[in-house]
Image (cartoon, rainbow, N blue to C red; front, side, top):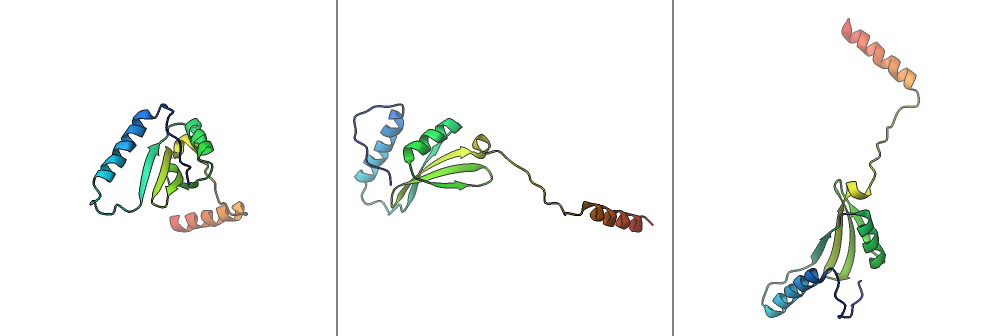
Length: 120
């Protein structure tokens, strides 16, 4: 889990911090809201360098990917996770591999015989 950070230092994320504090204020002011369950705080990243910096600061995290995105997931507590998402094209290299039979010559001969038979 992430460590609690002392208040005091302003940084480039001040507007984000203020927005998250507004969410906290809203939730505290409305205790009768239904249980919102487990939640993710999603953050978009746009460069390998940003991803590297986030990973370094988090220390431990889970990795997740699908056909389009790569994510670092770090628990804040048992009900809140940070999800840092970046396009897979930004961080991954697509590699295509082929699975070929060892005896290509016999495979080609089989295909040739089929073509001749079909053409007759």
